[in-house]
Image (cartoon, rainbow, N blue to C red; front, top):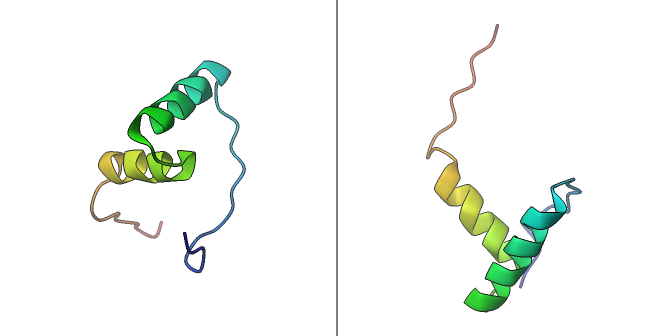
Length: 53
């Protein structure tokens, strides 16, 4: 895995949610990072519009 276009982050999430995510990553044979990216890609819109106030 290359990290040239990646940034380390710290998140505080529910412990049960983290355990479920780790388990699912094992089931899918992918890293927790890959699972999180996959979930965010599905959740977030293709384009994010930001308007100035």
